[in-house]
Image 1 (cartoon, rainbow, N blue to C red):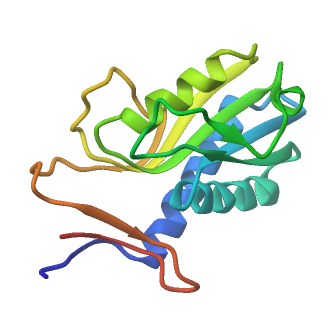
Image 2 (image 1 turned 180 degrees about the vertical axis):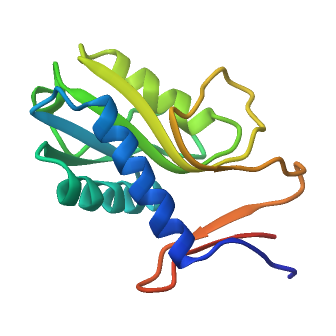
Length: 165
């Protein structure tokens, strides 16, 4: 299988730090914010953002994993934080790749049922193939790819990378 590296470990680190600064600028008046990552890679990316935020900002960061069945996004969504932990707070919903927007839009829908102070979205890669009207407020990179190409995000110790196959 032919692989084309889009982002290497260092580039992902830079983009993650930049997103963390953008989040801090957006939520600078908040005492506490929630970084909610969609299961698997979205959550791993959320952890990286949260680590960067804790280094650069005096804001308390709560990390939350959002369990969405990507094959059946209309199924019930679970979070590892109770609603009381994110109610009336600023929240950033994080995923690794924004492709069709299906996963992100159902994640957004889940959190819209709870009153929040501010709600934003962040992705590492925005593919520009949306079938839903959802956008990433913070993104690492935008790619215009064909529908036949697949973006793979790999988070490995000291070897994070994104490639196109």
